[in-house]
Image 1 (cartoon, rainbow, N blue to C red):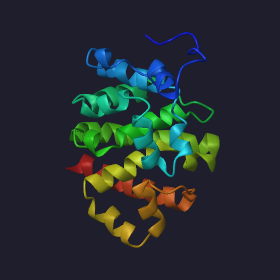
Image 2 (image 1 turned 90 degrees about the vertical axis):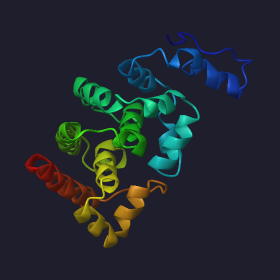
Image 3 (image 1 turned 135 degrees about the horizontal axis):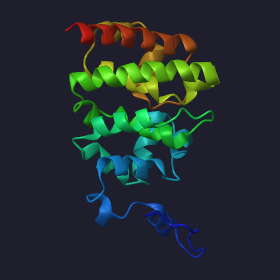
Length: 207
């Protein structure tokens, strides 16, 4: 249930934030699939862009939409996120709210719940999604592309030796993985993440 009218002009900043937020007393009653859709409907997705880096922006976003904290606590978050991404058509315009959901999927609290099979499915999907974005947006896909955030952060979380070694030689990727500084990741940087993600996926499929 979401408001259909704008909040009263007399509302304070905190009252406006609460007006658009998911009520605390219903958070635990929403299915994880419904929770993801509710988070996607937040009007605050652009907060990530307004902050100094995607990770800093995501932390700020959680202060405006409590649904993201709840999503990180859900044990079935990986399965629900995979289902959600599979059901969505790739938008032909930048979608800050979709970007917010993608960043959420790359948080350690959610990454630790991915099974091997879910990692394989998600990586396959993210690689395809990234290729489509590169086709549609060209350079702009690197600015707000959550697929490379997920792939890179998953490999760091899993302590993938090859990718960690590449970070030692690439300051740009180190800054990107931290997600706390605003800059444009180069196409070469994105290609590096994709290369190691493809190699990691191959090994997952082989073991």
